[in-house]
Amino acid sequence: MSARLSTHDLSTALRIAVARLSRRLRAEKEDHELSDAQTATLGYLAREGSGTIGRLSEYERVKPPSMNRTVNHLEEAGYVERTADAADGRKVVVVLTERGTRLVAETRKRRDAWLHQRLAGLSPEQRATLAAAAEIMREIADS
Amino acid sequence: MSARLSTHDLSTALRIAVARLSRRLRAEKEDHELSDAQTATLGYLAREGSGTIGRLSEYERVKPPSMNRTVNHLEEAGYVERTADAADGRKVVVVLTERGTRLVAETRKRRDAWLHQRLAGLSPEQRATLAAAAEIMREIADS
DNA sequence: TATTGTTATACTCTATAACTATA
DNA sequence: TATAGTTATAGAGTATAACAATA
Image (cartoon, rainbow over all chains, first blue to last red; front, top):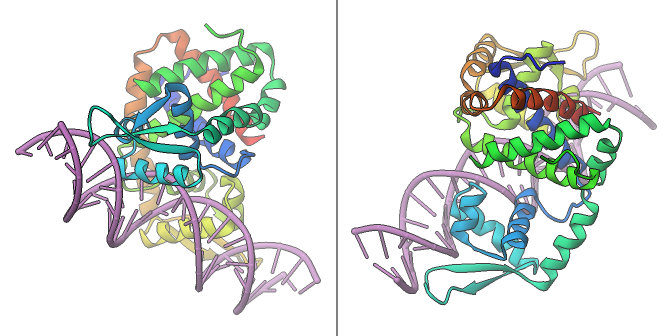
């Protein structure tokens, strides 16, 4: 057990664990169709309905040109559309196409297969720990 | 609290939390000198002492050409050296230079600043949860 | 013939700087 | 003049295919 780690050791341990699991999730991902950035952007649009380039880049913590490129790829693939903002002609509102909406729904159903299998092998206590940790990590990430 | 999440919901929640925290850690990283892949590789070498291209690529779950490129960058920067394997002429043994060893030591001291600050603001119980979760995530990632 | 590493090539993500269009 | 988006350019990671050297 390591409940007695100092916060310094904990930050190191947590950083390594997150980096490593993130890497593994990428390696195990079934869905080879979309990159992480594309997936995250589609997910945001599915949750929020729409988003400007600026809002999307802010949320994903990348610069506008990076998000612009990601949106280009998604648009070329037919998953999103650029629409005009009625109130401000400078803005571009990105929305999911029907095809994009369908992709998000289908992908969600099958994409967690590898992780789900690992979690099923854990004890209920371990799963509860991860559930609580996931909430804390989300709060830290969005702080 | 979300201790009662189904394993399906948990896998989704955990995946999103890990992806988001990983992204945030990258954005907050003080150290602009080294990429994630370079940092991870130096860390492995610091822990294990040395590694072949094959071993490194296996551990980081990338293909040998990718690791070869990462090692090229580290070598050009003077942090690692390629040495010959006495027993097998095909193999290349990568080791830290003194400069690389120093960098790892210095970097470790200051690189967790952002995360450390967040963790200091949590309750002891929350830190214990993260410490336990970090262990579980490491096991999952390495399974 | 099989293994280890490298090179060649290509694609994506990331960034900064510079440009266009609109406010 | 300031803001939103785009384009140009470049650096780093990833991969597959093909090649060299060694076992």
